[in-house]
Image 1 (cartoon, rainbow, N blue to C red):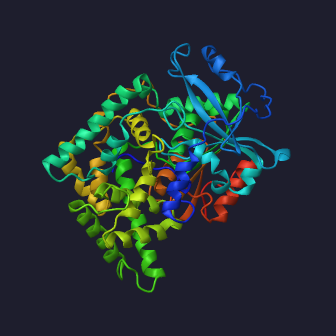
Image 2: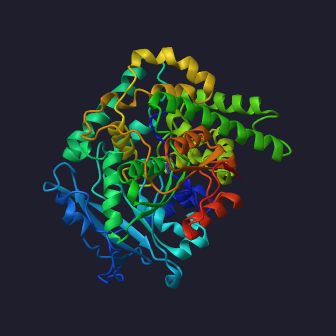
Image 3: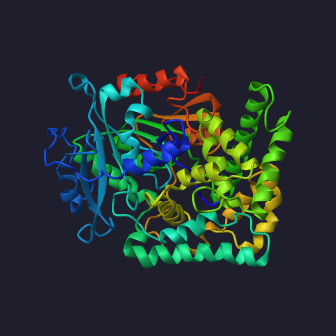
Length: 518
């Protein structure tokens, strides 16, 4: 599977019916532009908030945001940052911001900057869902501020492929078995890499996580905050940890949920993620066996998993018809199965999709795949698939030669009999990468930072618990909180122990006990 850590699908899988979710998501992005010139009340900057780390950045750190109403109920603004921080007097780019003002202005604590992951997911959409994603103690106390990181969403975006090309890329066979299939698979990797440079120009080389972290500090200053209060999920934990390394003394209260291990390379990350998705799939089947009188998948977990594997093999040979005007390929089917595994609340959607697929109709699985890749009814609603590639491969351009994939497949198949081959071939993802980062690799410690709470979940499919343990250990001030449960990330997942710990820290400043097990 290509390097898709995934964002929080709570943004997408809402409203019960998948078809309703697709329509709601398409409509939600139609009103991003400010709809009124009415400005929000200005915030007086805290002392020292706008001090730039180097003189050449002063104009960026001192900028004032002009908030205007947007999407009928929110506030939007644009933040200007350098394209290349080595040359702050050169070209600039603009980042989209969205703010949900604190519900209790009299007791407002400041700004909570949030990032949902991806990489590539729009943070403005995440903030717009604040009432669903965050619980009342946070929504009352903070202005929830989301930003689309450089190269993503409504910020100046990277562009790599046309919508038709993206359809072909996403639906391609993720486990090429023949020379022709391998040539097609690798050909798309080359076209994606060259397309990013050809269609995005200089921006393609300046969408790294380190540069996004520098943008985050400019945003902190523009918000008038002397320190950054931050909640990052999934890839957002990598962004937050990178910020802590670059700006440790500007770290305020920070929570990193669904952590990424920044000490290991792409190969080990992919292997462990493959194992995580297999564990989640087995937990899903176990739930079906335990909670229904007659599970449609079979009487045992092994039987149920084999039935899903057989379905994928049949779809590989014969794509299924759908009501969407496009067939369900095995590539789409894998994404369609993976998407609901991110959240236990959506397992029932996966069951409905698989039942329909077993009956020969791939419509719901294709809708789930579309949600995972931000494919709407009339095209792609954002550039998250392209941005995911551009950011991941700029951060770590390593790629396994295709000739070496067979040598690693056995280890991946042992880790994940269902998805292992997909992840093994995903190691070739950056083979076509042409852009090169100007940032130096970082070793993450965050020396001097305030306590950073790191949350991990025992059966998280996308970010295994071991990653949270390792990130908490890497950070000098890391504090580990674990949730025993299913799904991606631990906050607002029905565990009051985790939720209370997050609220006590972000609202009251009470640091949870390191190693708290919930």
